[in-house]
Length: 277
Image (cartoon, rainbow, N blue to C red; front, side):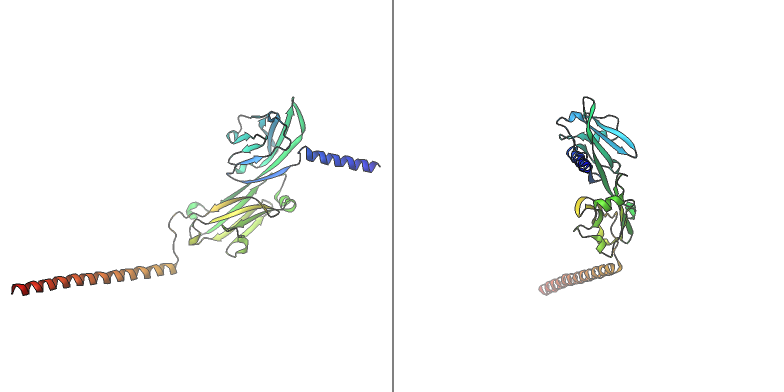
């Protein structure tokens, strides 16, 4: 009988945790996007809402009872939504971490915090812009910045998180032997290495975050050559042949035109001499 009582009590506690919105959620976005973090324990009036940010064991108050705090770095990028959500404009990689929505009534905290974990995706290149040219090797890095409470191994194993490189058509680049793709689960980094071709100018490669095969967010890298792309020997040979042929044809045309002009002048002079005689 006592065992049944404790089981019922445990069930009520779990049910209450769902109803009060204390269950943490994961939000994924890429650098530069705007994001909305939901407040799952919001009351009817957002003047009771406080938002806290935590990373590296440091807690910062962002919103205090409905009012944005002054003196914080991202003050201008933060706002409180009509549903008490926390809005962040132009997310940077430094914004990842744990966010807690807390409610105060008459100075007393109501219910447990509703926590949201923000994961930020970023793509970068190992090469400088001047090194991005045909024939050079480039390595792209795709990193998912995550709160240390959720290491990458855990996200992959329990949440079904994957980092996937695709081309503009959405085809997985790992199936193409031209690309070398590797994944470091300890740091949540996926790298893509390839040798650039002439036709890669303005080409997009995209790193996607999926959760159980559902797309969560993506970040794109676009290849930009700083100068005119070099051509390979076969293409150069073709260009030389075409230019030579055009030059030869033009020379023939000029010779014919010159001959016609000279002939007309000769005929005219002959006719004139006959008339004089």
